[in-house]
Image 1: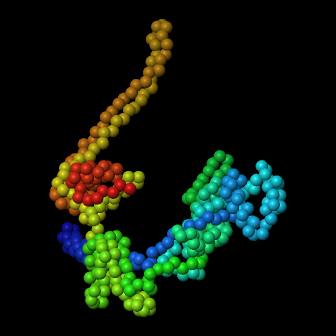
Image 2: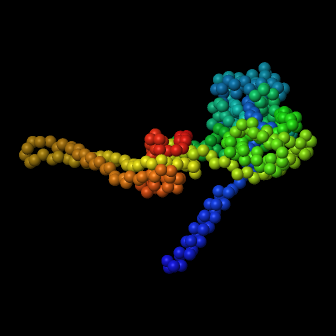
Length: 381
């Protein structure tokens, strides 16, 4: 059996080395590394009303919901002084009881170069006392940009995934019931001006600023098209000269964004999520010479209740006696040694040898950073 497995294991090792070599030589498209400045998105926001709820709306306690409904009905031709007054007098407390209506904030992201008539997704969030938006419909809501101009109009039935049900003193909820979405729920009404067709050059911004990656992109573009077509403004922005004719410019940018580039290695970084115990260590993390041990002291207290009976003819009384058994357990943890310049795999293997839990791993990494042995940026999120 050993003679049979030995060639097999050698073959597996060779395949692993080939896979690692292929991963090291992997190239990314410029499209995946950069974004065009002219393609930047814009945030939109609006205030609206949700109707058709099953008694889970704001009710009569919120004045802005009531005022919004009155204003809307007035614009629709409903006589406020007659119809609404009659309704108010017929309800308890003399107020409109809007249990089926909820005031909401509507937000959306307008992608760059979006044309009037195209549709975008919108997000709906309750701002009042509504307990659920399930089954509601958004009335026509104008979405404005930072300049106060209306760029889209939203309306339609909500898609809410949250469920909230209760009865007989019990309550069950799943997801968020006060937030919803409307896929393709807004129609774009205004074009956002962009410089794509007005400048001689196109500006590319790296998603993650890196001088090595910027240099590689410039070299790839100039090698493909020759001359000084691309030049760097800094470690993030690259200016690319493009044809004046728009049809040729689109074709040119399509060729540029599909060029393969070997990006630079990211900075050495350790990301720790203290809430979930998640630790992510980048490939370039190094540790200088350090000796590490980690152990915890466990204190357990066991309580034993007994009854002390008096002796015969002693005229004594029965007494309750409480005994405590205290134990201190300090497990023996081996100390492991980091040699200078160890890589990621050796770090993980060394920590796994002592059976460190996620919380213990976080404590070890923080101690290594404090001692100056961790050659990486430690981010705690």
